[in-house]
Length: 257
Image (cartoon, rainbow, N blue to C red; front, side):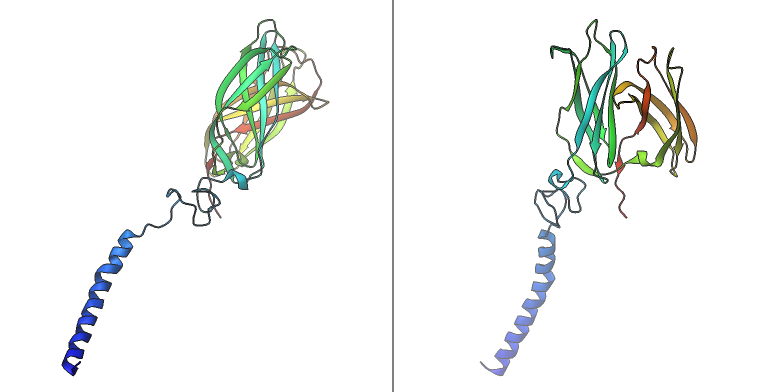
């Protein structure tokens, strides 16, 4: 090959490489799709397809199992019950935004008396009380109560907003006529909260729940303290031991460090 031919070949090769860089790389970038939490592929440190790693959805296999600790029917008056259950979730940064549940109330022959369904959430890192009131049972006594979830639990990275609320000064009075429970709620957050539910459960000295109620606080401002009140229409048949007052707020989005 002559010198002129070699020079022409070199020029041609250079021009070819120039156009390759000019068009091929942008084309490759156009074809490239970065990994996401919605691409149907297990990548970017995920432990299941589009779960865990950097994703909002979490792989339940990597979490500490949740548990329904107990459930019980609580007699309000003859023929009227409330049902309450405690769900424990030890995972501080994982919760469930919405899940269906069912209470079943049974008599001494294990025959279903009443059934109630609803929706709840599972708060991260603590107890979630599930409560249903005003359950009519006629003249039948409730002996056993079961709580179960009726749908799959979809776990997400979440924040337990009730951690910003503190409960103090719990006081039970007038137990032999019309029992009344009062408590103080303080909002330790820098933001206000609205529509906060509170579930109260009263236990006897042996640790058995025998009364429950729910109340709603429409609003509490940052740094504010408010009183909440629970009442029952009939006297208590047991000596009051432990008193739980648990706040309920839908879990918020997780904010990383």
